[in-house]
Image 1 (tube, one colour):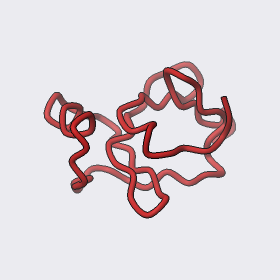
Image 2: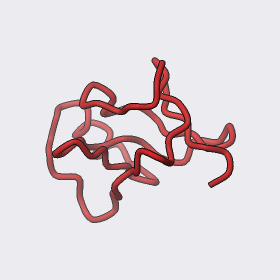
Image 3: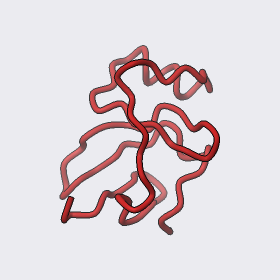
Image 4: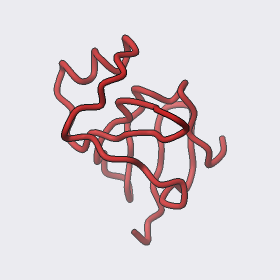
Length: 79
């Protein structure tokens, strides 16, 4: 575990204070992009490595991440 997101983390859910708030759908130029409400199409695209992060995804700033686990990415509680 750590606090650095990599391309291998695409597809992981993003959790804030125990609640799932989105999913990493893309990783581009060192920046992960999170879809706050991914549907089945976005989930499949992320798993297939489709690079278009779409209009609903937003960049996830490194300082917002508390921990990168094997199954999820946890955001800082104080956000």
